[in-house]
Length: 257
Length: 257
DNA sequence: CGGATTGTTGATTGGAGTCAAAACGTGTGG
DNA sequence: CCACACGTTTTGACTCCAATCAACAATCCG
Image 1 (tube, rainbow over the protein chains, first blue to last red):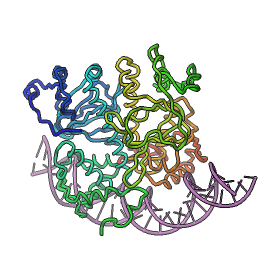
Image 2 (image 1 turned 180 degrees about the vertical axis):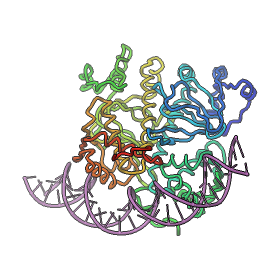
Image 3 (image 1 turned 90 degrees about the vertical axis):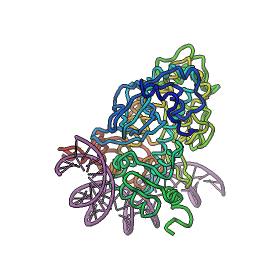
Image 4 (image 1 turned 60 degrees about the horizontal axis):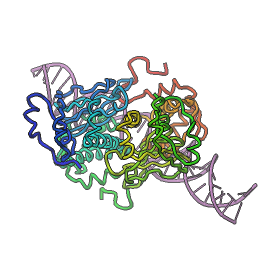
C-alpha cells in the first residue's frame, strides 16, 4: 500500500524557501503514490517545523487542522485529572495527527514532537471542501482514519498481553513493522521516545520496560544500545509475542528448548 | 450532544412491515436531532435483525456497509493466531459499527450481537455519495469516527490502570456515562456481556473481574445481582477511579481522610 | 563542570494469574 | 416437569510476576 519513501523532490525548493507544499506532495507522503493530478498540484498547504519537546496540538485546543507528519516523530498524549500522562500512540512519517477532533470542536488529545519535526498543516474546513471534488484526497482521509482505528486495536491487543516481556516484544515488532512499510530497515531501529513514554504506552512501570528489554537481550532476541535496537532473532521474538492470555502457548515446544 | 432517546415514531409502520427506515431516522438515532430534511426523508436504508450470539460482520469480511445500532448490543472482537479473542469494545443504541474498514477493502475486526438486536445497513459507497450533498450525513460520519477514536482512547486509559479494581470501577463508570448520554438511568445498569467479555476488554483474567466486582460491593460502591448493577456510592467510585499510575494520588489528602 | 533527566539494577511485597472445584443459571430433550 | 449437560460465575489456594522504593550509572544540556 505504502510505496517507498518519497524523497523531497521537485517541491524541495518551494519547501525550503516559503514553507509550503502541494496536495500532490501530501498524497505522496501519505503513501498514495500515483494519485497526484493537475488539480492537486494547484492546492497549496503550509508546513510547520517544531523543535523537540514542543507541542503541536494542546489537549483541549480548538479543532481546526489536521497534520501530516513528513519528518520527525510525535507522541499522542492525554492527561488525566491527577496529572498522569497517558501516551496513546506514536506518529511518524506519513501519519496523520488530530483525527480525534473529527465531528467536534476541540481536540481530546495533544501531540508533542519527540525530535525536531515537520508537518503539513491541513485546515479541516478547506480539506473537507476539497474532498468533494478530489476523490484521491477523500480516499486519503478515509484511509488515515481506518489505519488509525486499526492501530488502536493493535494497541489494545498489545496492552492485553499478560506478561510485560510479551508486551515489549510486541511493541518492538510493531515498530519494526511500521519501519518496513515505510521501506526502512526492519532489523535496526531507533527508539525516538523515552522508556517512560514506552511504559505509559504499554501500561507498565518504566523500570519494567528496562527489565523486559534486558531480558530480551539475554534471550538473544535483540540487541540494545541506548535507543538503538537490533533485531537478532525475529523468529524467537514472534514466538514470544504469541504468548497470549488463556491459551497455554501452543501444544508442545514452548521455546527455551 | 446526544438528545434523549428518540422513540420509533412515524416510521414505525414502515419499520415493522418492510424492514426499512429513512436517512432522517438514521440522523435521529445517531443523536443528531433537528438535522432531518425533505431530502433525508427520501433516502431509504434497510434494517437487519440479528439473534443473540449471531455475527453481524466476520473478521476479514469485505468492507461494504456501515451499521448503525438501533436496538440491542454488540461486541467488537479480533481473534489472534492463537485463538485468543480480544474484545475491542461494545456498541449500543446510536453507535456505528464497521468504521475500521474505512479506506480498505476488508474489516479487521468482527461484530457479534450480545442479544437480539437491530441495525441499519448503510452501504458505504452509497453513503459516501450522499455525504457530498447532505452535510448532515457527512457530519454524522465525522462525528461517529471522532467518537470512536475518543472511546478507544478511553479504553487505553482504562487498561493502563495499575489495579484491577480501578479498571473495573472505570468500566462501570464508562457504562453509566453512556447510559446517561442516551437518557437512561445511570444508577441501575444491565451488563449485556459476560464476565469473560469484560475481562478480555479490560485485559485481565475473568476471575479477576469477579473478584473486583465483589470487592466493589464490599466497599459499598455498588450492588451486583447477576448482570444487574446498581451504583450506590458514585463519589466513592470516582475516588477509586482516580487511582492512577505514578502519581501518589495527589499531594495532601489521599482519600480515606 | 555541575545539574537534571534518563536508564539500569536490586530488594521487597502485594496483587493478579493460574489451577481447581463448587455453586448457580440456562436451556434441551426425554 | 425433571434430569442432565453446558456455560457462567464465584471462591479458594498457591505461585510468581511486576509495582514500588531506592540507589546508582550514564547521558544530555546549558
